[in-house]
Image (cartoon, rainbow, N blue to C red; front, side, top):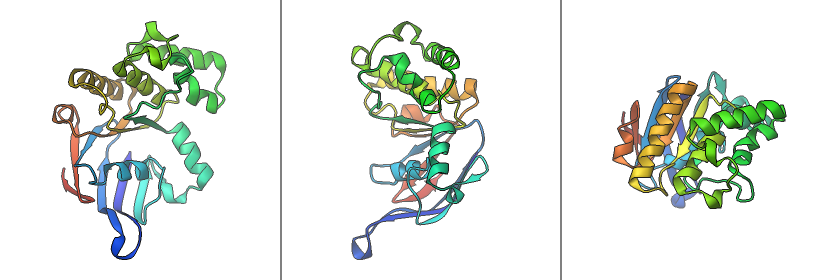
Length: 222
C-alpha cells in the first residue's frame, strides 16, 4: 500500500542545514496499522508530511497504492489528499462553528458528494466512533476524546485507502488516549484501511501490527 524508498529531506543550506530524513525506506502492506516512534525532532512529522503529499522530498521515492507521488502535479496531489488519504492531527482540527455531523461531512462536500449519500455516510461514521447521540453538538460541547473521535470519523469520510495520524492521542489523558487508539485499531480492521500513526506512548505502540523507530532521520528498528 505504501512504499518509501531512500527518502531524504533537509531544511536550510550549508553548515546550518538540518537533515530531517536520511535515506528512509520501508513498506506497509494493505490493511496494516504501523506505528512510528521516535523522540521529538527525529523526523516523524516530516515523514508523515511527505507520505501524505503535503511536502516533497529532496531525494527518494514514495508510492501510494501504486501511484508515484513525484508524477503527480499539484492538482493530482490535491485529489490524492482529498480522496485517498485521511489525516488525523493532535490538535483535532475541527471547525468550531460546525456540529459534529457537519464537521464529518466537510470532506464529502468538498468532492460534491450527493447530499443523501453524505448524510448516510456521516450517520454511519458517527455510529462507528460511538457518537451517534452527539451529532448536533459543536466541538466546544465535546470532550477532548469525543473531538478526536469526530476527527477520526471525518478522516474516514471519503473512504480513504490510507490514514495518517500525527500523535492523535497527544492531548488526551492515558485512558482516553488508549480508547482512541483502540478505536483506530478497530477502524483499520472494519474499514480495510491502512494506517501510519506517529506516537510516543508505549502502551499505544502495543496495539500496532508493526513499529518503525526513527532516530536522527533514520530508521533504526523495525
